[in-house]
Length: 156
Image (spheres, rainbow, N blue to C red):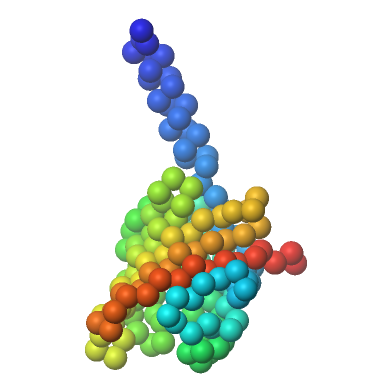
């Protein structure tokens, strides 16, 4: 029979392990078009992310060129789940980011041309921290779309 003290110690050890397991997404990331799946959306051709990750704050500078034109955007996320405001294509986007184990879940809502678009992303590091996998789900009045984006870390 497990004593209360033993149970408490095991619980605390598991809690500290979970806290330590949060990855750091900092780095320069380039999308691997061949390993990514764009669903029914056009390929962006080129997608780069420059990520700064300091404790609970993540800043993403994103550069995209391809099917939907060129886009340069900078987004800031607070990982405790605090709502942040970002600007994309001149429209305000509300973002909430929070951890689920070693995975970061980001929920975004933006109004573009009178339509509300919900965009969620799930970020996970794989390949010993050299690959960033992003599951992106988009919901709009026109329907839903899912993409699986794979990024390779740049060795600068």
